Image (cartoon, rainbow, N blue to C red; front, side, top):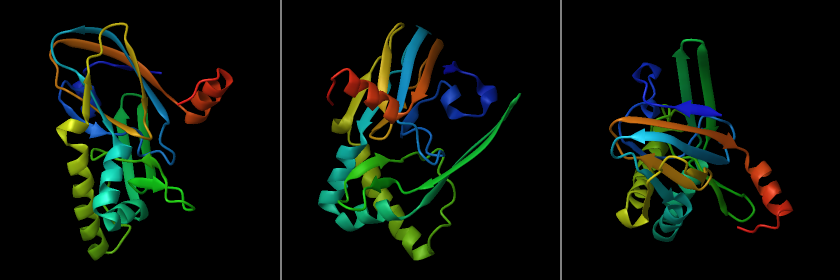
Length: 202
C-alpha cells in the first residue's frame, strides 16, 4: 500500500500538483506491476482528473502503419531507473526491457513499458539503431496522444480505480488544493486467479 499527497520534498513528479503525462508504472521493475489501484480519500480543490489511454490500441495503430517501427520498439532493450533518497527511504531500482513486449511465437503484444520520466540513457544499441528507435517512439507517442484515444475520469472521495498497468497508460491533470490518495500494486497472477475462481471473464 502507498499513500499520496503533494510533497515537493520527495523529488518525484508524482508527489506534486503538476500534470503528469501518460505513462505506465514501475518500468524500473524487471516485471512491471500488473494492476494498479487508486483510491481517492479526499480532494478539496479543482482539477486532478485521471487520464487513461489504451496502449495496446495505440501500438496496433503503429503495427498497421509502420510494422518495421513496431518491430524496433519490441526488440530494443531500454533501461529504466528509479532513485529515491528521502529520509529513511533509499532505493535504486533498474529494469530493462523493450517498450513493446511480445510473445516470440506469435508476436502478440502482452505488455507496454512506457514512461518518459523513468527512461534512462539509451546505451544498449548502436547510434544508428537508437536514432531509428527515437523515430519509432515518436510514432507511438503520436498515437498515444491523440485526443480520441483519451478517457478522462474524475476520482471523487470513496471512488477506487483499477488499472491494467500492462496495457493502460495513466496520467493526471494538474490540480489545486489538498488531494489525498492511497493505492497499491497487485500482481496479475493474483487478480486473474481470483477472477477465474469467481467465474469472471475479461
